[in-house]
Each structure stands twice: as structure tokens, then as C-alpha cells.
Length: 250
Image 1 (cartoon, rainbow, N blue to C red):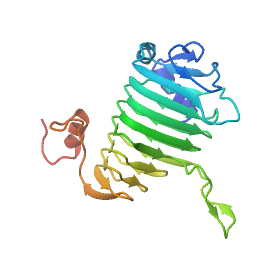
Image 2 (image 1 turned 90 degrees about the horizontal axis):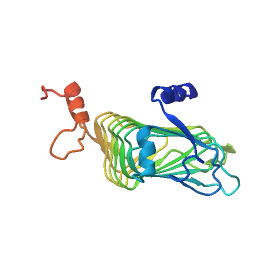
Image 3 (image 1 turned 30 degrees about the vertical axis):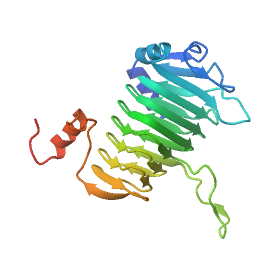
Image 4 (image 1 turned 120 degrees about the horizontal axis):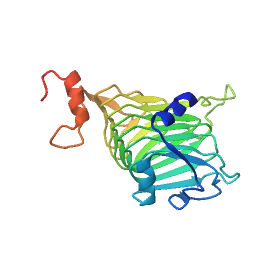
């Protein structure tokens, strides 16, 4: 999303703008975070913050300066969200009906987007001059690491150059299941409907509707997807079967 797209998102969803000062009783603000920073909420997310159904903590990671201009759209439904900032420049959007436990570390003009109906039992995202875009209806287990930056320079000694200066991106498309303790590394796309198995490390693109496993993760099965219900199809798996399946679905 560019700035125009973000502005349009805010207008279309008729969001309300608050300063941290106005909602300081409902969020946990730590370590030199300016109360003049702003947050966009919808009616449901505001009420859930007030009732403590939804918990939001904002922290400063750098030891040098305060954080004065946080950019945050926060429409989650319930859970615990910890946002940690090195600087002012990043933008985080958490869309409607996002639930669960998330820690998001941001710096250097990073952008994080979490799509509707995505859930997590424990996900840590690290973003530095990077983008993480997560689609709708994803399901993340616990121990998930989304590492969208190297954080330190990799030096080519002969060329006398740092070779990893470029901006990093991770795209996780709609209806992706990340199983327990898996890791997603920079510059990959995980295709719609796919499953990343327990403990896998994703270092290259994952095709749509496939299962990957191992270190590094490799495709072990294709033409597969998943359901939130162990013995029944959920709505998204029904949709995928209807489009790609070999039989009619009722």
C-alpha cells in the first residue's frame, strides 16, 4: 500500500482518529512514546480496548531518542499486541477481526499489513526497511518468526561492499497456515491456501495450495489446502475446493 491507498482505506472504513493522549487509559504506552501520536480505530476495536478484551502495548526499542509520530491503524478484535519501534517512520495496519498474540518490531520506513480474520497463537515479526503483507484468514500457530530483515550488514570482503542493503519483502497470501515453530525469511511469497509444516524454515517462494516441510522448506505435496475444523470444511476451504476441485461441492 502507498500513502494514497492507506488514506483511501481509512476513508472507506470510516475510521476514527485518536491521539494516544485521548486513549491512554486503554492502551499500555511505555518508554518515551509521544502522546501526540495518532491511532485509527473503528467502533468495535475502541470498545474492545476499553473493556480490555483487546490489549495493545506500544514500546520504544532504541535507547537514543523518543518516538513522536507513530502511524497505526488498529481494527483487531481481541488478543495481545505488542508493537515495538526503533524510530518514527513505519506504518502498521491491523485489519478487522484479527485475533491472537503478536509482537511486531518496526524500523526504517517499514510497512506491516495483517488481513481480515487472521489468527495467531504467538507470532513475532521483525521489520527494518522492509514490508510484510499478510492476507485474509491466515492461521499462525505459536513460535512463529517472520524475519523480514537481516538486521546487520553482510560484508563481501573482496568487493568491500555490504551486499544486503536492499529493501526486503515478505508476502503471505490468503488462507495460509503456519504451523508451530516455523520461520519465514525475507524476500519470499507464500501462496494462497498453503501449509508450512511444523519447524520448517521458508527461504524461497511457496506455490499456492501446497504443503512445504523441512529446513530449508521444500514442497512435499501439491493440490492441498486446510480447514480450521479438523473434521469439516471451513468457508475458505470450500471456496478453494469449488474453484480447483474435481467434483461438485455441496
